[in-house]
Image (tube, rainbow, N blue to C red; front, side):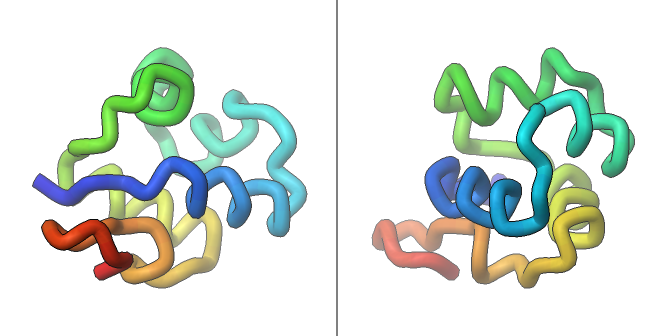
Length: 74
């Protein structure tokens, strides 16, 4: 499973003017609770489908929010 770079995700959310988690959760069609697990609780391993939805909703590339196994953005 891909690992999300939570810090990078947060920066992209701010750049796109998403100040609240519920905004992005509604936009990409995942539950607020699941997004909170990813962002606030540090659950960085997520399903590929969630990565795809986040990238589409935030208009970013996978490489911007996914961390490779060596700790560098993939």
